Length: 426
Ligand SMILES: Cc1cc2nc3c(=O)[nH]c(=O)nc-3n(C[C@H](O)[C@H](O)[C@H](O)COP(=O)(O)OP(=O)(O)OC[C@H]3O[C@@H](n4cnc5c(N)ncnc54)[C@H](O)[C@@H]3O)c2cc1C
Image 1 (cartoon, rainbow, N blue to C red):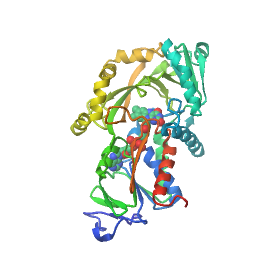
Image 2: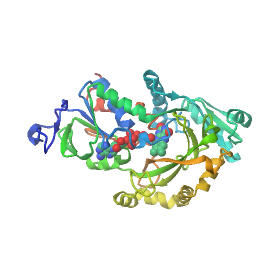
Image 3: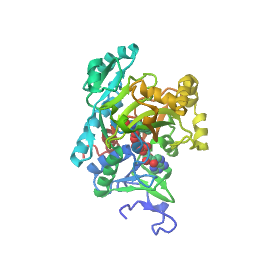
Image 4: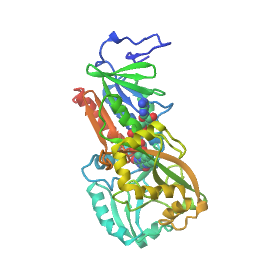
């Protein structure tokens, strides 16, 4: 086995020996989580540090099975993000890196563009401000009038719209599998079915408990997605954010309705709830989804309404962030729950943008669960949040557009790891 640092118990002959010394420079950088953020970080590290330098630990039987494999597949342009934030920077760079990555490997990628549609005068007034922000982020976008909107999107109704040419679509699961395959080809390991259960500081590195064995790590990067706050706590860190799972429910357009949009069709975002708002998304395989509703999930991996995990629920309601958010936003939350449970409400939200859609055009589609980080005062953690402690990085908030930005986030984290290890110049 490549990993001289793996010590197992039971049937393994290489029984864990606590006298074997502290983790050191011959031990790998251990990445927890085989989603796009973890895999990209590992991929970048492997390119600069070589074979045997990186080990990815993924609890599932394959990579990318959670947020990375349950998302809308949109390569976001970065139009909405506050200039200067990590999101704004890494979304742009990430989109460009991703397009090149796909082109070089013949992974299907389409720059289909999107329209952000203003239906009422209040929304129309907000368009120029959004365009200004987009341009500050380097996004190619402009306001188009009703006539051009109708010409481009005959089934979409609106007073005006923003045309964002940079938006694209891709299959992030395929990208992640490719990253994993290249990592393995480079002599590094992606260990599937490897759930991390403990993380103990040892010298300048860590001992990471996986299944019934221990892995020695010279450095740990926590990219645990929906579980990242728990993993940080396992390592003895105080995670100042609380991750709350929100289930996004989708419907698929069927039959003739599939042809109702040529671009991606989005409403003007509500600045208070940027992740809400039913939109229509074309996928790279030709499917067209609309959604999501966003309702609190009763399990971190609760893809169905009936999935309840008592530990998760108790943890959610015990968090001051969640309680404060719920108190402030109960009206909006209730609206989302009603829309989630009433098909006609959902159809109305879709028809606000595309009036030709009929209830029978919609077929229930798989849901996704997003990790939404809350600060203790109940406000949403809007930007990516990475906490650095000696010997470890914890990515405690990587919401959308983290899939788009994945390759850029990976490069950013890999630089930070190499700087911490004193390898930045190598
Ligand atoms: C419904 C939905 C739609 C979205 N749409 C888009 C979009 O269109 N475009 C976009 O850019 N972004 C989108 N996003 C956001 C994007 O998918 C995520 O931000 C991104 O995938 C985060 O990647 P990740 O690697 O951090 O997390 P994940 O993909 O969740 O990966 C984390 C991994 O860690 C593993 N793990 C957790 N705990 C352990 C443990 N103890 N031991 C070992 N492994 C562990 C998990 O099994 C998982 O595989 C969407 C998200 C959702 C949910």
